Image (tube, rainbow over all chains, first blue to last red; front, top):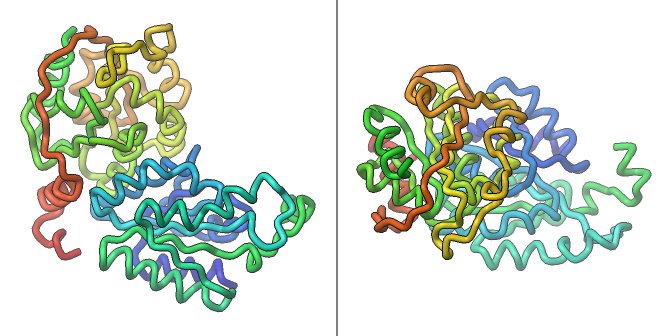
Length: 172
Length: 185
């Protein structure tokens, strides 16, 4: 299962701080991070807070990761300016909505704007094409961010998360 | 009270204190009190000062962290008080220098000029609200998280600017805190 494997990658990379705004697609990974005594899972009121959290953690010498849904990308835009200006390393794992088979039309505008918005703010976007590709991509994102002081987002495709209806989402 | 007097007093015996300042007037205030590599003055990212303080406090549990920011900056990141309230970092203090104005944009009134009570918000979010006279103890030794919004005069005073370049401010902070090995971490 990819959430377990992502958690192993985060753990192996020495990630200590995990900021998140919950998303159904991140449910399992959030639980794994909460249960990990070496990680501090921090629930946020808005995704923007996770950028400040990650910046502060890096000032203090710790690595972090930020978990959000695609709608959250719109909430972090201005603060990504700080990430770029300061060259803070940042890894953001984005579960996508508004892609293939979306049932909620309100998710589509932001979902479709995720890549251009992130790229406009200087974040490198990795989009794994299949479930098998997610974990190697997260591994590469961690290395790019922390070896090269880059902001890197991994877009986990909606097809992989596989939510097709409200009923299915509520049941997850 | 005068904002520069308040901030100078808070930073007078700062020792190993780690300091984050919100953009605008509070960044100038901490610089007027004496620039330090262990200060991280923001020039942007409005609303994130308290969250940067939280990240730093979690990463450095043995050090004390002080966030000094303005009322407008704190209002933009008010949700972060709820986030700090959940995490309860014992080593974090957030001080709001409250002149009830947006100082950099023409001294327009903020919400606090209309009775919105940041101390009340912080208290409701589970932070320990302390009075000005008790701040030194709160910042340096008592178990936090602490919060204080201090009313100051709305005055236009000379700018005292810290270095502008973000990457420099980050690198000097990490080097001073973590040692030269931070450069190649």
